[in-house]
Length: 364
Image 1 (cartoon, rainbow, N blue to C red):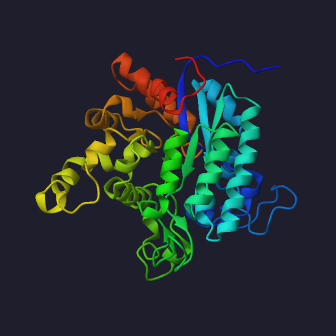
Image 2 (tube, rainbow, N blue to C red):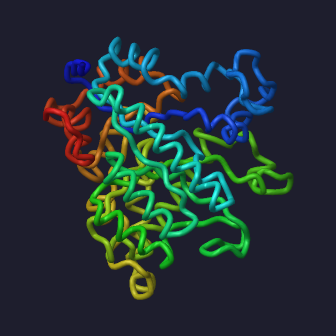
Image 3 (cartoon, helix red, strand yellow):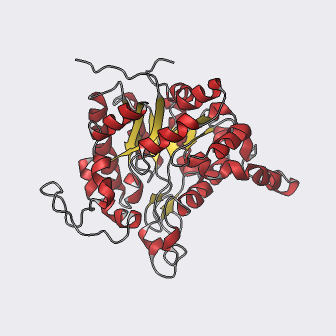
């Protein structure tokens, strides 16, 4: 028997989950999110690996819950539909290519089964290992064409090893180089968006004497997330990838990781003759933010900021999102109900743009 549809409400598209296998790898970032909580709680499932994350504000249990507390909160506060994705860092936190591919595949299989239990309320964004274009393209194709995912989720750069293919001297892999043209071509052919999401730094970047290791107070969502991911987004925009594959669609959260507020200055210098003559891309940053990139309100419930973004890149490129369970459904919905926008714009941001961009099976 199919479950009933919810009344029309908001559609939230950056909403995290954790598959049972993920308990082993999320341990590394759990203490960063809530320092001081390292002991294994007594009520984790039997067989949980040593050092599994604690219930730091019961976050792990909320990540693993889909069909009870989450759906109850959605019903209570008027969230019609969620696109679910594996919480950060996912495969991007695994330096071994084989293990990273396994993390992605297992998580995608699990999430596809969860979505099937209530497709009227949930869809999925697929994880991919980004060690190389071949593996990333293969899993993206499988997830979209066989499992029915509506897009991909990538958590900033891929951990790797110094000297590995596509990796820089620090062992990080970014996706603006020629080695990932095949991946972006596949994304364009699949015609699904890629959600670029932040992540905590790699282990070597947390050692004493490093930029983040000496400044752990600014790790995470408040500061480090948007600084790291915005650099990656600027690199993609300026690389020429969107010129080669103009139908690629990228989504970034948290009101665009601060980039819309810097677009004028970024373009002002990027368009100077000395830069324009040598830059890899044909167009400036605003062009790609009005042709290839969309942003969401996830975890950035700022009405003046949203209105500024609408003015800068257009209402059709701004989408509602929550960032659950890192932020609460209640807080996001309370804020959204009070946002003062024209009715047509509010409908577009709340649900219309998501339905169009992700081709969701929902009534317009």
